[in-house]
Image 1: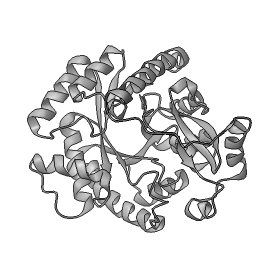
Image 2: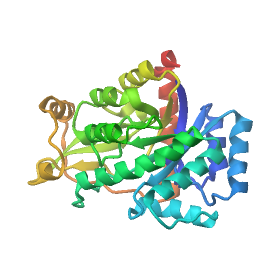
Image 3: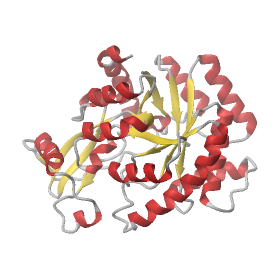
Image 4: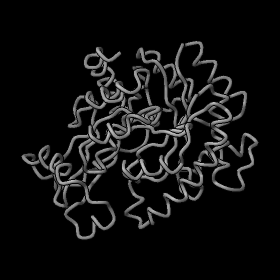
Length: 333
């Protein structure tokens, strides 16, 4: 297995893509899975500069985009970067995904990580069945281009679709170019055993976000506290083992976002399970057992300010996570 960095961890650092690659190399990591926060240009000369920097350091350089839905706010930055680079961003949503595939190809990335929505999507009242239909149509079209270019599209469990819903989307897309970005901690939004969910995704895993959450109690139910790898409750070594059995070469990309207050799962609020699928009883019991004897957190916490304040905390958690991974995953290398 390879150990790398997800660039979202550095969004408060001010580093550009080459700076992120230099940071990863300095920590002895093997590559970077980029999302779009470090990018200011998709122009060919800039992509060539980034690819050259990765090649010179012997690092993999993988690309992720925002939402596959053009209406979603997470699609905005990618659309602007594409427009500035001369791409036609009008037309169907699949076209934007295909343009991002072309950017991935220019960077030397064998895959494109994608998402649909985020942790707010269900609570915003979206029809998840309709969104799944839209996602399938977009991905079927985009996967044709991916197959032609020899690339793969890796959809993340991003706290919107459950893992079981993603498995249905995968079956409907039915393309050898389609698989998953396995976010090892976002399984917790399903309120099911994280290792069990990792086993469902593992056969189709193409890349990862490697992170952890601590389960806390709140007056309205539970929350997921952002922590370094070794401080959380999820058995992320067991998750890595499940992935390695299927894909010994897969990259574990460390992702840290300690800037944010704990993500709240208000399971005691009326209507929560009308918006969110009810988990298996033994799955929910896993979360209750982890948090049962902990004090109830009565404050929702606060997000740290963008920039230096957040980067100080997140860099520390990144360095702790790199050390933990080296000490605990050496037998999986």
